[in-house]
Image: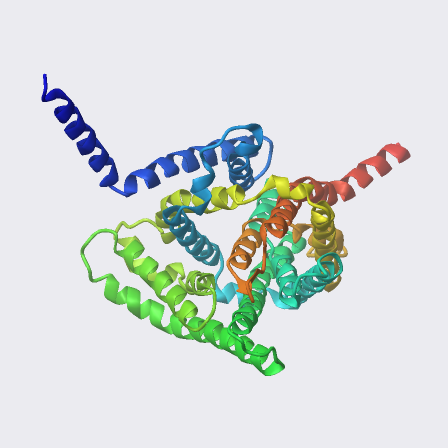
Length: 443
């Protein structure tokens, strides 16, 4: 019996030692259980009420991140977990690669002048209005904060609009072609603005003076990278996949495509641009004709191969972004007003782009400018990506997008995303309602 305390102490020490040397992936696995289940439950609920799944994933993250307000704690560490953050960042790269795959360089060249004008106005107006809101409501913050606020308003989440157009059978209408074409250009212009603003902020944080020459250099760098990667990629991609088609191993298409995406994302990062710029360019470059030999021998299309990876990693990003929203920050003076102002200018800024929709549709009637403007309103995932990048930037110790501003931006994303589907349905069907009303009046 005398040896019993020694035995118990030894056992206790062994248990403590086992915990200390536990596989570090264990905590990540438990975090992923919560994040993925929350994402799917939130996504399911959102779809049931007619909203995109991404909105449910974001709201699920907001709820988990603020359970402490209701007296439930224990999840706060997840939002700062380095491993989950790495998976979320990888998810963003995959997401932008997937978005790029939905369009091609050839399609970008065919969108026409109206789409180009809509896109340019749809970027310039929200950027200026967002900057103005920051300057008026956040006068104590630096000009870089104001500029980045404007940048977060430039993006358009066309996936939401595309779904509404498809549900209403209007995907082939003139308005739909202008909206979808403008959204592609909008993404490119938004990424350019993000590159410029981020580059200027990084340069300023390192002590470099703000100058038009510096801005021009960043713009030139971003433009050369995008144009150069597209031109070189279109030449290289068919040859790369011709060589890859000689490999007899399975999964060649996915491995080569992801390697191409990650390489361009890495190169973009090396020259001072956001990795998502390179990932988006990689998606634009890769066309089905380039890897036809691989699909002809039985491999699935690249979109089908990417989807399972995206379904795993992208929800991690959105839930994590939601968890970083501090609802208590809305109790601070001015934050609710900032959110309301951002929502207002987010809507008005995209209505300005409707001025670029000129001409007539295929049936000879005038283009529905209001529907074009409404179709460009949702910010969705791209606006969140911009905000998350801003949250990681600092100038002289000041975080560009602090917790309060981040919460206001997320609320803007949620509102514009939820408001667009019903508003677009109302706008596209109002002509039909008028015709029915007129017919009834004359009968």
